[in-house]
Structure formats: C-alpha cells, structure tokens
Length: 378
Image 1 (spheres, helix red, strand yellow):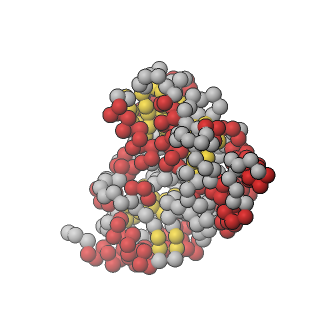
Image 2 (cartoon, helix red, strand yellow):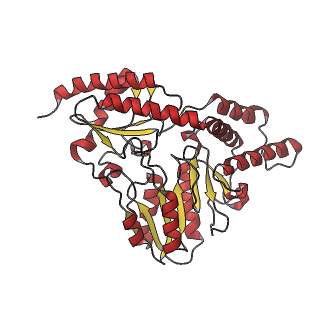
Image 3 (tube, helix red, strand yellow):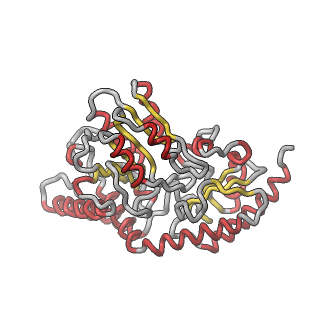
C-alpha cells in the first residue's frame, strides 16, 4: 500500500508509540497527585512542555496542551472573545480549515462583524483585502500558516506586522497544524498544533498563547494547564508528541529534502499525462509535502476509489470535510471550479514516503485515467 494522505493523519513513529506505552503501562500516574511517582511524571511533562515550546521560541508557560488542532482553534477564538468587552470585528480567510472557518463565521449570528478575506489563484492571502479590513474595531484575526489542501504558505511575519500596525488591539491567531516543526517558527499571539500530523498519536495537540494576551481559556474543571484547560493531563499523548517532535527536529533537513523529492518526482510523472493541472503555488513555492492536482475528464471521488483498489490512498480535500458533498470551498476561493474542481486530488507526503512510491503511484493513476476517461460523459 502507498499512503499519500499524510495531511489527514500520519503513522505513529515507533519512538512515539514506545513513549506512549511507557506512560500508559509503567509511569501511568496522574501528575496532579502528590506522591513521588506522580511528581516524577509531572516533572517529565514539564520538561516535554519546555522542549515543545522552544520549537516556537516560546516559554513553557505559554503552551497549553489540548486534544488536538480542532480544540486549539476553537479555544483560541472562544477564550479570546470571553476576555473582551462587547462585540468586535473578526477576520479570517476563505480557505481556512473548518475548525477555524465554521466557528468564526458562526459568530455573525451573535452580532459580530465577520470579514472573510479572499485568496489569489495560488491560495495565498490577499494582503490588500486584509489591509482594507483592519481598523480599530478588529478584535481577532485567524489565518493559517500552511493550507492543508493547496500547500500555499502565508507570510505570517508580514501579516503579523500589518495587524500590529493597523489593529494593535487585535489578537492574531495562526492555525499551524500543517506547519508546526516543519516550517520555521513565526511571530503571532496564538498558534495551534496537532500531534497526529507529526507522527504522534491522535488526541494530543497544543495552543501557544503569548504572555500578555488577554485569554480566558477553554473548559473548566480541575484547573489543569494553569486553569486555562481543565481535564486530566494526557501524559501518554504529551510524551509521544515530545518524542515525535524531537525525532522530526533531529532529522529536519533530511525529512524536508525527502518529501520535496517525492513531490517533485510525482509532479514530474503526472505532468506527462494529458489533461492534468496543478492547483496552488508552483511546487517550489508551496509546502514540500502537499500537492494538489486536477485530472480533467474524471471525478475525483471516482478516481480516488479506483486508486484505492490498486493500493494507493489519496484524498479529494480536507479529511474533516470529506463526507460533506458539494463544492470545495478552498478551491472555489482560488477560482478553481467546474471540471477542474471536480477532478481535484490532494497528495500529501511524509518522510516515510519514497521516490519509488511516486513512480508507482503515477503508473496507477495513468492506468486508472485511461480506463475511466473512456466512460466520460459526452
């Protein structure tokens, strides 16, 4: 089997699985307890927090552990608005992940002024539209670092500087789920991450909240995470995330180089097939691990199932929206519609993939297209 859907989730690294097992079976104590084995676990969690925070050039006190990217994104919005008095303008982009786009746009019903910024044909934020929307009424801005469908990389540093200049009271949140550890750290007020995109288990993530940001946190209860996110500490998940990130950092250059080579190889192979189009930035300007292509004359869902039967797993977009039929909001915002949108497939890579898999995948795609295009409606 060839797995080219790593933006949806990744295989857990053996080191991460072993770390989780250790803290499930041996060091299983609740770090909130007072006896010495629990204190030792708390010490390990704090050390992991410090290491993970350093990936963002942050202090350990600025990192809140969560259940994953969706909780982090939702908590960033809710915790920020709870700390503000009165309604304010909220800004996001047309291509955000559903866990950002849906909560932000839903705030319209509560009387907030919500502005959705467009993107260009490559999927990058339109800076002119953002500049026009920023004023003293803006309280919250949420823009993703790397787009999960197109691989477009936003210039977060430039966006942050613009926000601080024109809307100094606004909190700037970044969805970094597809970028954390892979991309260089950026300046912002909040940053979300998710472990299962980095070869850690599902169910663990974090939210960076810059010191000084007014923030009320998320769920209430036992007061864990400095009272900002209650719930028994997910020690196995945290330690597995720490192990996975440590491995990624130690092999960062090799990992990025390998993924880019796989992407280049697959792209080169696919462009030899007729009626194939690239969606998103030039492959050298996008994230090295995401490639979105359209195959004209076939529906993406049909091609996906044909490839699955051959042992190649890909997707037609965000896993969180895969079961919702209809137009692809991200591609539509990029101006990709009609037959081109219908035939779009996303490939996403991890350091576990190889160039040989890229060759084999292209062959499977060519074979499936040759068959499926024969039955194209005329």
